[in-house]
Length: 153
Image (cartoon, rainbow, N blue to C red; front, side, top):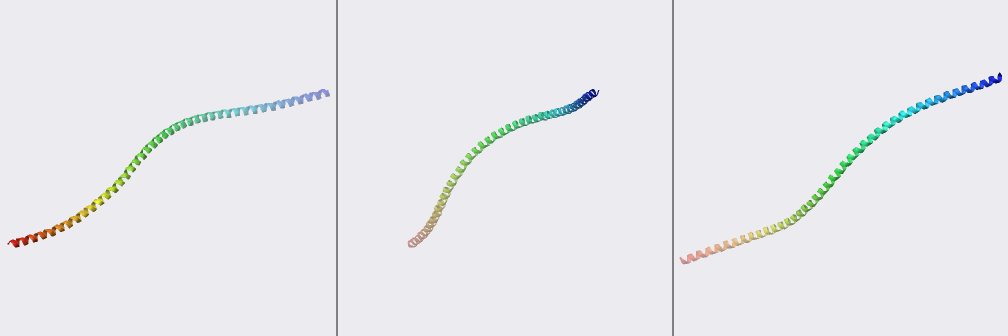
């Protein structure tokens, strides 16, 4: 009986050990299952966040496309303004050339006016001299006429 009892004790010990081991495996399995569920829930949350981020990125891409369109429009307008500025620069250059020509012509006109004024002054001086000479001659002629009248009388 001793042998059987020992054998029985060993069997019971193994049974208890197996039971404890199964209990431990069950606990670990339950904990692992709980962790898997938590991870699945977190993964679901991450998927939602990822979907949200994809939506936001799509929205940003659309806005970016819109901005690109606006930039293209602004570039075209800028090109148009550059062309207009080039045209204005050409017109300004022509006006500047015309102004320079007018300045040259104005200088020549001033010179001609100054020469004309000088000539007019000279003519006026000559006219004064001529008038003085004529006045003297007129006086001399009158004096001669009086003498002739005296002689005739």
